[in-house]
Length: 294
Length: 123
Image (cartoon, rainbow over all chains, first blue to last red; front, side, top):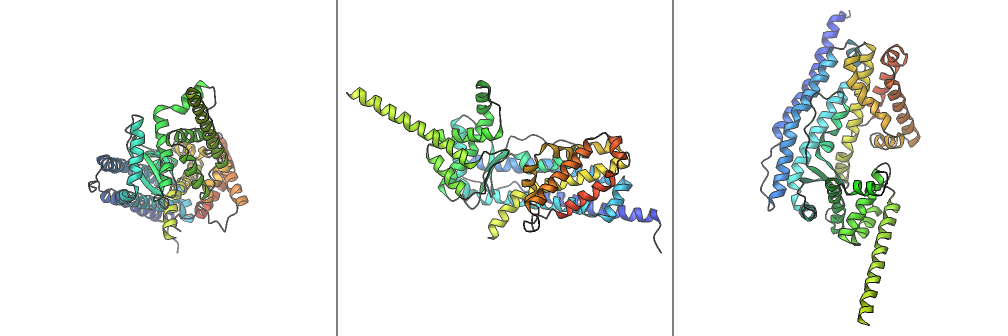
């Protein structure tokens, strides 16, 4: 004997609600577990940046909760969506698993922030000093990953939620930058220069160097060109050793090219050209000095 | 070796989750449009239409990390990306036309199939 349709619907509603309850408790648990009482470090800016980041995440978590609540209401008020769920439970299971994975990732990365200070200390100081040389004090944190990138905190941690239907309350803007580094390469001194490249992305964003260059020279702004431009900025600041570090890094990296990065060979050619120009300059300067001695 | 897997997991996991959310949004939009709930569907529809702004090559790259490498080849991934563009084009049409089309019942099943295929990043 089959259940009447109404009862069947109620059963599905209960099942959907049970799945959403798991999502809510995951978010609540994450909020409780994120503690911002990190042990003091020798450099106050590191502790402050990490504390502010954790505070920001904790403040934004209720918005993910709100978004989930809205999705639940849409779901249980749509008979078709529920009927669809009955034969395709993946639609909720994926949602639930996503939130679990997100919580695991945030928890693990926040834990790593304090634990990894020792091995990323040199990188913290290099980025801080590079920014300071250009008069900037942008807050930033270094996050262990498998590659070197620089991006705003909001994109790095919360960007994925923008693709989940309408957001009831937008996330607050944050001025914290996330610089990710390859955990396997951080111990190599050359990798510090690759992190330096990421610092120049922050400088470029602050000063709009690439934008102004494009405007003055009537060049179309493009992410690929920007990447090469930031390479040149880094090379001019750190010197030819930056080119060597980039070359070594490219040798062991999965090819980085596409919408945001030009081909590795192009980037290296540009750096090589730049270094040659400087050699020429050095040659000219030496000759000028020589003629003075005559 | 364990370390390498752990690091890759975190970098790629958010990308995969973003794609999963977009697929869920697409299914929800299609179901709501089918019910005539156009206003509710709009937010879900818009985030799915964003697929049109992602070139096929980039989409293939985003998706390739989520599918098990041995089971899906480049040609199949391109087909998946093209299908997502096709559904995004469909969802960009007039809501009345979408509601009356035969595809409105077909596409949610296609999307749930992809959702199921996108492997958990922790696998």
